[in-house]
Image (tube, rainbow, N blue to C red; front, side, top):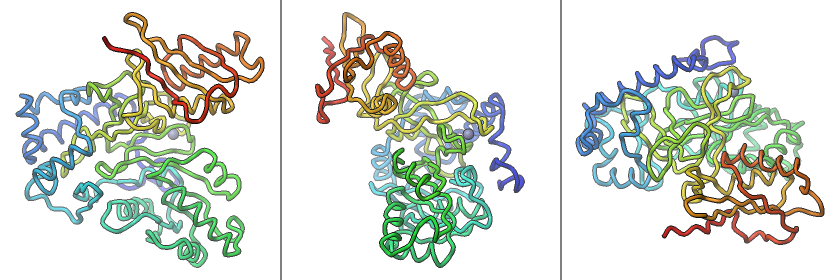
Length: 424
Ligand SMILES: [Zn+2]
């Protein structure tokens, strides 16, 4: 499917589906994928038979809980057992490219019906007439070529610069009048530094006005630098090589919209069950397609869903960013908290050191937040309440005790979360 009209702010009409319609759409595509997968994929059939499940028992997104989560490590193991795709594709599957990524993991290229990465570029304002420097590797891995396809789908012209040197990239930006960049944020910064070293004024001498990043977190300070100092409008996209694009940022820049081609579940990694809306859990992805029947891929990333309507008008729910990896999170009263959430709380409070301590009192978890203050900082009760509310907003868990400690009590080496519970 291609952009509906040139002037539309949306890639296609799917981005405006009502919630009930999206639910039906997801369920329908999931049913098709599972039934076809059962017929064509030896692995899907095996998993269903082992668990004594009939494909007719998968009728909705909620039913996915009946199936196991497949991590990257597990996929590597299954692909070794049954090369090249672990039995997740038909034996005679036809594909125009086979990608590989470290592991090794092999992935068949999906059909051209799938607008992989195009939604993210479209939402970031990439259009016909743009000349885009694609600084992702084109060699072996899926990155270069799949981003390339997404860019072509929104009408942009692509410069496949890949892993060329920064000096080469500067030359291409200058000679070809490059207007947009896609790659990692750190590589764009390296290119800008090189340009300045070569005597250019990046903002005045070049035309780069937007950038879409993926594969590396965008630090807020770096984002501000790109936008304020260099006049580059920045966007984030999120995906995984095994399942393609998962979510993308719109101009609202408040969370990442989930792509219409994937079902995203946020699950408790210890049980595989979906958590309540808004709670932290592992991002688990099923890409709806008819070629590679990899269901419930566990990314190992932690996130939570934002359900509020977005200012851009897209109706899909959003991921609130990535809060770290599954192993780093600690479960408190059934909900996970991750170090990166605590860093976010600190940042919103102006950067004080803090530490969460989890204790067990009888059968109840007690969460204490230790917060460094200078002087009388948060002594009054309204300031207390403000900290508690902020913590609840970011971590979804309520703190039981707020302990104010003197500045300098904690050091950089202290853990952000200490779990003192014993399970006897
Ligand atoms: Zn939006």
